[in-house]
Each structure stands twice: as structure tokens, then as C-alpha cells.
Image (tube, rainbow, N blue to C red; front, top):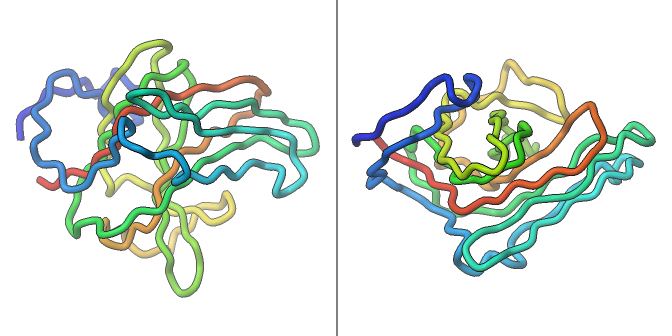
Length: 187
């Protein structure tokens, strides 16, 4: 596979792909297809907070946007979608986004011993610039209810059952992330 990357153009939180021939796609979510109804929102109101987010769809992309409120110990909004039949051995994930200059989390969910376990990877967006960001699956960190889980199993792409985005920050305010495509790549 040939592509050129700029390792520092995303603050070390993934690699922005400048030129790519990503013909090794093993699984893809194309947001120009019918994605409406597949995404579920979870905000901090499940714990008493007042943040709100949603996932809407335009002609060729989805938009995860909303407002983060710190009132009543709030501070996050997330969207998730179920996935099936991800191939074993996918090594990288590429997300094609246009952001607002803020940092988001991409989350991959597995079920282990009856528990829902999320693996997260932060990525910083450039305001009003569409970019493809590659995130190595090996760099995702396991969390459970916001705490890092050091003894978590190694993330295997075939075990992933959900993908999602999360916005969490220490300052109240608006957020908006346009998503065009999310692809799992095999080397």
C-alpha cells in the first residue's frame, strides 16, 4: 500500500493521509449511504448532565454535533453504531472527517466476559479542513466508564461490535464533526 503521511500534522494523535491509494479496505462505513437510524446517541444525561448531541445526515456525510454542558457534572456526548463481520487482522482505521479544530475520540467496542469494553483513540481535527486520519488499531486504549483498563485483552478487529465518536471536554460549548467514511485496513 502506498500513501504519504504527515505524522506531526495531527499532534501525534494519528496520521493525516495526504495522498492515498487505500485499496486494502477490509471494511468500510460509507456515510453517503443510508446510515439514518443506525446511530444511537448517549449523552451525559444518563448521569444527570445536560449535554446534548445528535447524528444527522447530509447527501454525502454524517454530522455529529451538539453542545457540551458542564452543569451537574456533565461533559460528554457520544454516538455509536453496531458493526458486524469485521475481518480479523485489520491493522489500521482511517476516518475521513471535516472538523471544527477540536479533539474527538474514536471508540471501538467489544464485549468481554459479559462487559461492554470501549477502546479509545483521540484525534485532533483542523477547523474547516477535510482530512483522512489513520489510527493504528494497536494504539487504541481500553476504558470502562472513563477509567483506563490495563489488564484488558488486546484489541482484535474481528471482536469489534460497535464503532462510535465521543466528544468530551473541560469547557462548555458547541461541537461539530462531519464524517464521510470510516475504513478498516489490512496490510
